[in-house]
Image (cartoon, rainbow, N blue to C red):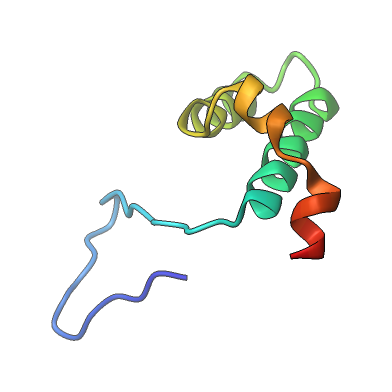
Length: 76
């Protein structure tokens, strides 16, 4: 999790950006979880759908995610 360095302050409403380093297995699970979450919310949850799509857009493309062999990655 990102820490705020000493002397740094966050104003109300200021955006905080996080950097995550994920293994291929973690990336595939994250992608799958977000897709499942997208399916779980109703059509009236437009804001939630938008945020989920924003996160998915930051991940590698669907073909790259499918190419990750979860069983192989978990054995490493």
